[in-house]
Length: 462
Image 1 (cartoon, rainbow, N blue to C red):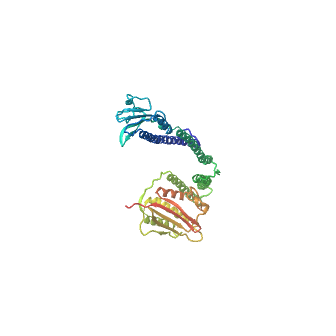
Image 2: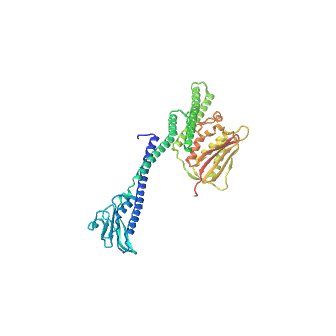
Image 3: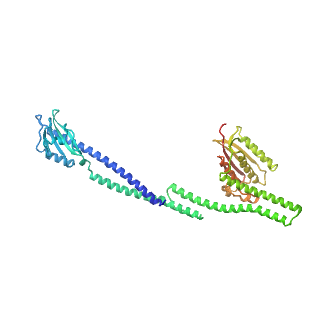
C-alpha cells in the first residue's frame, strides 16, 4: 500500500469532505431560497391582479378597461421585477375577451387557458386569477399569465452563494491544514524517536511543547517509555549476566569436582565427599533449568491449569501446615487469620500452593538477624474476589528495587550474595495468579517488613 504523510492524507480527505458538505448545503440553500422567492413573487402577482381587478369595476356593473392599463401593467411589472413574458387577460362572465396585453384574439384564448379559464395550458406558465366584482357579485375576471422561470432567477443571490462557498472552502482548507500540521508535528517526532529506539538508541529528546492535553500526554508517556526501555535494556543485560553466572557456577563446580576425582587428586572418603557435592550441584542446576522451563512454558500458555471450586480456608491451613513441617524449628509458625465464614475460590490448588510457598520462602530469606521472623497470612473476600495477604517483619526491599520485584531474572543486591537462584520466583508466581484470572501484587515494603497480596476469583455457589 502506498503511504503518505498525515498532513497530506488528512488535509486532502477532510477538504474533499468539506467541499461535498458545502456543496450540499449550498444546493439546499439555493433551492430553499428559490422556493421562498417564487412564493413571495407569486403573492405579489396575486396582489397586482387583485389591484387591477378593482380598477376595472364600473359604476354600472360592467367591466371598464381604462386606456392606460397597458402602461400600468408595465410600470408594476418593472417595479416588482416580474420579468419579461407577463401577459394580462381580462374577460367577462361569459369568457369573452375584453383585453389582452399581448396580441391575442378570442380564438387564441383556448390556447392560453383551459375551458374554466383558471389554468394555463403552456408549460412553465402560472395563471393568477382575480375576480372583478360589483356589489359582491362577480362580473368578470383578471388573469395574469406569469412565467415561472423569471420568478426563480436570483443572479445576485447565486453570486453571493458562490463567493461564500469559495471563501468557506478556502477557510476550511486553511483550518484543516493548520490543524493537521499541528497534530502531525509531534507524531512525526514520536515516530522518529521510535525509529531511533528500534535501532538501540534510547537517549531520545522530545522537547515539543503543546497546549493539547492528549498530545502532551503522548509525548510525556513516550519519553517515560523510552526511559523505561533504557532502564529495562540495562537491567536485561545485567540480569542476563547474572543468569549466566548462576548457571555457570554449578557447572564449573561439578566439572572441577569430577576432574579432581578423575585425576585422583582426592581419594577414598574425600573423593566420595567430592562426588556428593557434585551431585548436589547437579540437582541445583537441574532445579534452575526446571524453573526456567516452567516459566517459559507458562508465559507461552503451554502449562495447563486445573480450575476447581476450592475451600480457601482449608487450603491455606494445609499449605501453612506443610510448609512449617519442612522448616522445623527454625522459625515460628505463621499466624493464619481466616474469616468466620468459609470462602470458596476458583483455581488450581497446586498452583496456589506454589505462589503462597514462594512468598513464605521469600519472607524466610528476608529474616532480620536481630529478631525472630513473624509471618501473618490474612484471607478476606470482597467484590467477587478473594484476597490472600502475606506480611512479614523481615529486612524489607530497598526502595530502588521495589519497582523491579516482578521482573524476570531480577535479584536484589542483598539476596544475590546470600542465596543462589534465577530470580524467577515472583515473576512466575504472578503469571500463575494471572492464569487463574487473579493477580499477585506488591503492597508495601519498609524496614519493618514486606507485604504481598494474591487475588483469586470467588467461586459461584455450588
